[in-house]
Image (cartoon, rainbow, N blue to C red; front, side):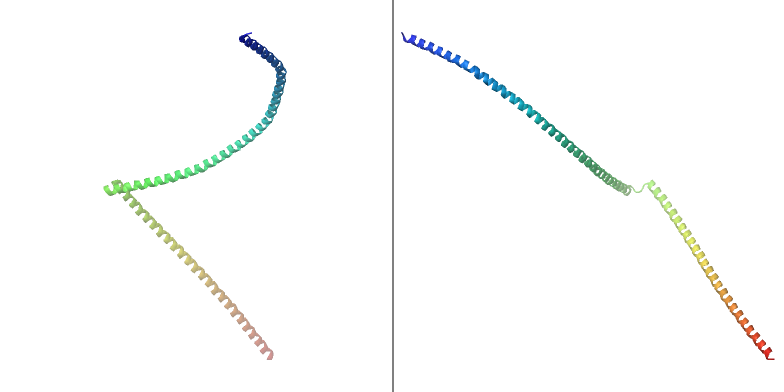
Amino acid sequence: MGSLTKSMTRLCSEIVAMRRVRHDLVRDLGPAVAVMKQDVAAMKADFRRAHQDMARRTKTERQGFVKALVHEVANLRADFRRSHQDMARKTRAERQAALKNLKTTVGTMRRELALDLAGARRAWLGPSPKELQAKAQADVHLKAEAERQAEEEAERERRAAEAKAKEEAERERRAAEAKAKEEGERERRAAEAKAKEEATRHKAAHKEEVGAGKKN
């Protein structure tokens, strides 16, 4: 038997042996695969149950988290809204005050500038006929007003003097009446005293006459 034949025989034997080993392996892998399938199915069922439990648990947690987050966001928005409204009111008042101050300042500057320009124009050109006429009318008005005030003052002084004279005359009249009343009262009392004295004297004289008549 040649070497080639030996090699081919050996190769065929090895191929047959390997086929047998492969068949045995495939036969042995069947139960292992079945067991593995069962294990994988059980593991998948465990994973499914765990996922469902985790889904239920995390759903409650997510709902609580979302509810708390919504409440917190609502509070933040309400705080932001209140802060924005307060800031708007404050800045509105500040803007209005600043605008009012700016208008006052600008108005004052414009009036001062207009007066300065008018003064420069009058200094360069002299007063206009309208200004002269207005000044004359103002002088006339001031003079008439001064005369009216002087007349009113004189009238007030005259009335005050008349009232003072009337008051003085009334005071003198009342003093004279009081003095005349006191004088009349003194005269009445003196007359009464004199009459009492005369009556006492007449009574004493009558008693003397009666005593003298009894003696006789």
